[in-house]
Length: 148
Image (cartoon, rainbow, N blue to C red):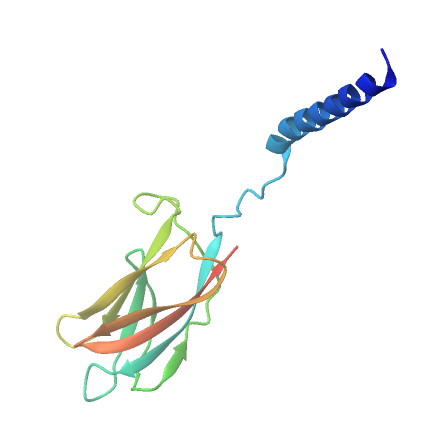
């Protein structure tokens, strides 16, 4: 065999060896386990854009049907902070760690008024986000952070 036919075969073997190595090691590449699944979320603040009543509102927030914070004496233009730590996504049905349901209510002397709901999704992306509750009963903005 002369040197002219040996070189193309060596290159072909080198290419095949590199391809085989890439195919074998690709599935072994490390992928962060929670890269697409948030570990927790944090409620940061709520701002009243337009209050429900001629006197101050008393809004409260529920996460997955459980009241987590009530605010008193809230007027248009005011921002109130939750001052709470992060919350884990609930692993139980129906949430299954995929989302959290946030409800906003207004405490009244009669039946409380439901102002709306929204969802915090585990894959919303890290960082701060806003949720809007705009209705004829009041307008609020809720800011939260998704934590990975």
